[in-house]
Image 1 (cartoon, rainbow, N blue to C red):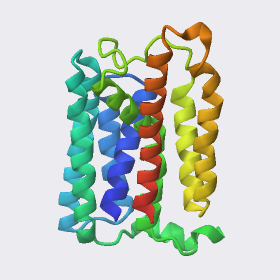
Image 2 (image 1 turned 30 degrees about the vertical axis):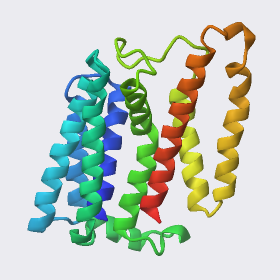
Image 3 (image 1 turned 135 degrees about the vertical axis):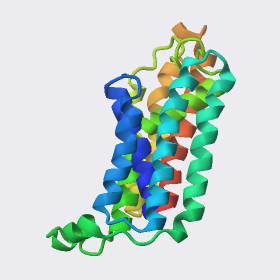
Image 4 (image 1 turned 180 degrees about the vertical axis):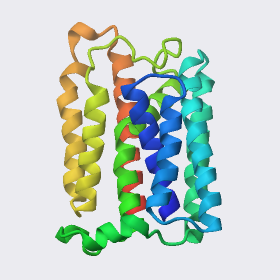
Length: 244
């Protein structure tokens, strides 16, 4: 599963850098370099690994450019390119994961030397996959949500994937926190608690969605909230499925 974990980390790093520094090419380059660096640290130097890492680096580069183009183009359908690329890359990595040799190298030696009880039985492959799954909950999760919203016309496609003019604020911070919380609870065997978090979010948002002062935009807000929330939860739960 080392290839899959590195792919997810590459996506996560690219989107995190882009969210911090909106500079052309820089996020894609940092994401691709992180893929190659992790491969070296994981001792992935066999011919098969080198080919796989090269492909993953190209995919990460393509992801960064596709996301930028998808949000920058005014057409709703532009969002389908990065969504299709993400889906195909993830599917391909899952299918090919059985061919990936186990990672070792410096990462494996660090795990062997670590004194944390939680890391005693963790392999390098597992560590990469966990890091990738949790990294996906950050900026990449937000990107996927916004792409789906744009592809359905739920957000204004002419404003760089901007949100509609509603009172719903802080989603770009609350979304990652919510997804990380849900994924952590699910990994800890507390799936019921994760469901409670989902229900609590709906209750907290209900006053905004039913406000009489916002009747002009209440339907838009409800569609935005429901679709965005379901996609966000799907990212978290889908990541959990990859980890089990």
